[in-house]
Image (tube, rainbow, N blue to C red; front, side, top):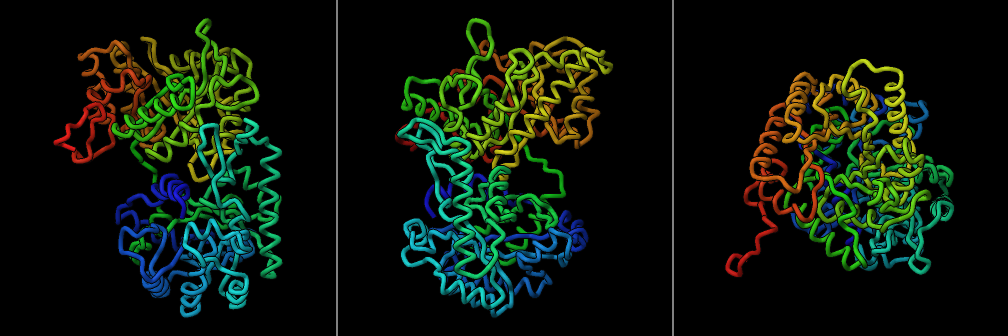
Length: 612
């Protein structure tokens, strides 16, 4: 596989597919797994070779012939039931139910080893499997497959027809020519062709919506037509290259005649769902026991609360403004180096520019149809943060753009995600709109109107923007509230409960130094939250440029107090290049998710030649 493919799959999907789950959780879920009538696990393989190294192989997605044979034998012995894609299609229409412990075995890319090594094993063990084919590769466009797997490794139509005739093999689309990256921004980042608005360098513009849709539909129709013609089948499914798919591309696939959509992700799949199905990705030549753990984790992940620790760093893209791309790249490189050393895992980016005269938003840092572009900085920042340091990235928009400046925030958010499909979510900054509701549990008519409007805007943002997001990114929407008044916050619980009901998160921003009294009140409120409510709460501290040693000690104590109350998601606001050194030196212990002292690195200390 080429470099872009490896980065995309490893960072965006593979690193989060199979979280560590305790053994007792697996036992508790056994009955539920076996009784689920529409649930199935999908495992995704690529190349199969005899000489795959036990670890550190040149192709992390390859599995040895021996391990694959052992896995097939294990499936039969342990009572797992390999199913066909047709079974999923019928179950989706409620025309049949799936057997207990159903598993769909799939192979991507249309590689020669599918015929020479996999096919004989399917016949030996009588196991059905699905193969996803890039039709342009099968028709002679061998450069990409040669680069990925070596020359002479493309499956041909004669071999595929023989495999299909066995009755054990189904073929689906892996696109005609979308298994590649295309230019995604003026800074020359290459991103997945299926969900990216291409940046047309010669014309200095982005692909229009109509151009994008035409390109995707044309490609998928061509792929289906070729498969149907060559194999005499009615191809129904698209297995998206790199697992990159949005609700928009999902709809386009249906128009092209491919109503079944498969991604790569970490959620158990239900055959009666009409949404894109997730697939677990096989990596690092696993043994049957390891694949079994992954299958169980795949099922488990959908049922257990996800208690991932998060360390959130708030950053304003105004810091990245530069006279040219070289200056931008230098700033971005230093910023990502510092964040990587800090070992936080979420970036919350302020993506609008405010006028120095009146403080109103007058531009953005991403293409859109309503406001001028200050500089086109979001896409590269987001992509580099995802791929270089494996950070989730959220974009923040202020509610005042709609309530005060009368722009359409939902449309603006849709434009943002449309051109940044790997963004992990939108955070709506409520500014002062909810102050009345925070301070009192009982709201008057005017306050209720404000609350209803904010939540309506958040709902619309979520609905319209999520349509364009990569389904594999676990898209999130959230509300940001500043706690800044020395008053009771009796209404906070009601707001959190309303957000939780729609699976939204609440980002609370507070200064524990200057607003110590309200922080104490907040801590008392948190004590009475249940686990589910705590999982939807993120607490960020406001950082000031003039903070002294005593202030930093109070920040430290504040973080400790939150941890003691089982708040797993904390962070800070107003991270700047200028204060990065102080934050790293004084707050690393509180913000870093690095559990190993051996892996600690201080980017602000220049190593001597003797220690290098």
